[in-house]
Image (tube, rainbow, N blue to C red; front, side):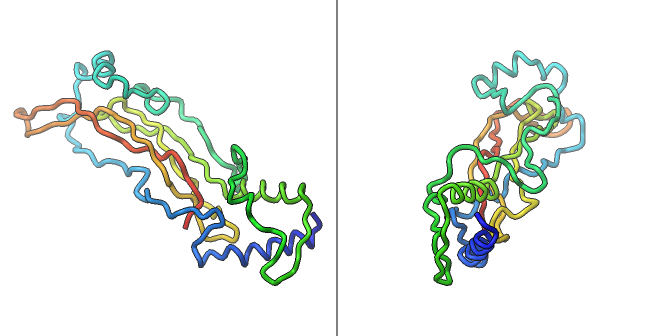
Length: 215
């Protein structure tokens, strides 16, 4: 693709994909999960509300959690904190899988000004692959310590990369659109002081599973 063609193509996309319309070329709906990931829970600071050593028996708690124990997303011991998935600073990550149908159908042969743009199949394929990589929104996973009042204590939490716009032209950002629910045990106390009663109860914790470029 010659430089003049690339410049004309980019200027055409800038008109077709105005952020003010809030309609991405992939026709992605706005994120329904704006409250994810979950904010840190404010715990009662009194250690009297913490589980004791006898309450943290691994075998007993594994039996209580049963099939809900998912080692891919939870850990009893502190995992080695590494970058499980992170894009480079310019957000040029390789998008997995084939091009979405919406991208395949994108009309690039005619500009909004009526001019015809000649583009070979190879150049079109390369440009669409670049556009797909530019707008792709991966889920970034990091291990989070939920504290001693959760079992397992560590969860692999998902986040959407939002430090840079994912659209062309700029204006849209990666946002969560899907989540999965993981069941943990939560140490729960009723009552006060020595009259309180504490036990482990199952609680559901949502984890972001998909991010998309959205308004």
